[in-house]
Image 1 (cartoon, rainbow, N blue to C red):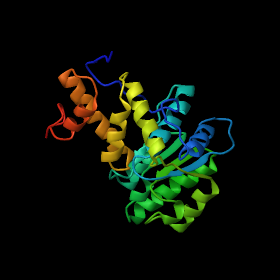
Image 2 (cartoon, rainbow, N blue to C red):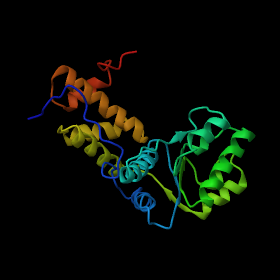
Image 3 (cartoon, rainbow, N blue to C red):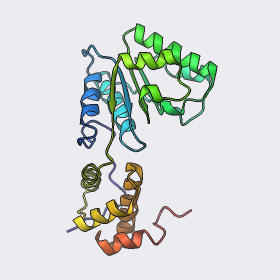
Image 4 (tube, one colour):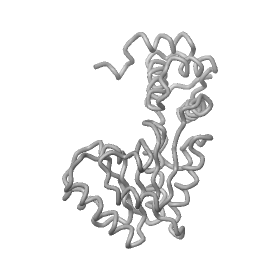
Length: 237
């Protein structure tokens, strides 16, 4: 019997909640290594398409290290705009330099200098540095050559879950987290009708899930089709 809850059950971004597959297993292993205080490696760059799990791994590293000493270490993303001073202040007392979406670093010389100084300070002190982007280091736009070369000194891993087997595993994990059963035909429907971006895949599942919750109906192929043709409760604009 399918159970209904008043709100979605959301997994924390930890290593345990990360769905491992062929395209991200190496990245997961390196992320786990970086999160071990005694590990000599302290520099990691993760790259891959949007929605592949880079931010999840970044957060999982922060969670694992923070859990060990009772602290919280939020990351910054270049999807947001901030000044060089704000960037420096954010990491003033942190043992971790966690930077997401490095491919969105703007062409701002002052911001580049602040990031370069932070990188050097952390690297010289042996503190952990983890950065992510959509492309390999050498393809990052607006990034100075000296910082690109420094990234290549450390560990570099691709994160990708765009193959159908990996995407199916992600859907099954989400369903498991929400304690619902999803028929194979519904999984097939989502995979066929959704783009290969994991974020879109998750959104499609959430639409079906919310409609199921609102209408008190089991998740089925007719419900999945209906979710694509009507506003989802709680998502109306």
